[in-house]
Image (cartoon, one colour):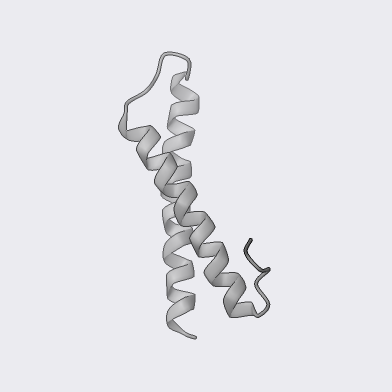
Length: 67
């Protein structure tokens, strides 16, 4: 059982870890190609989501460098 992050820095590290895990799963899903049950609009939005999550991860990394 993990303890709840107690400091702002701990929360940023926890947020980064969670986001990184979700981003890895999304990248893995996207790498398999568009399944038939996902239309082109949703597939495009998943691609935008992946790029946005990557930017967010990069931003968290920059914040961590400032600690």
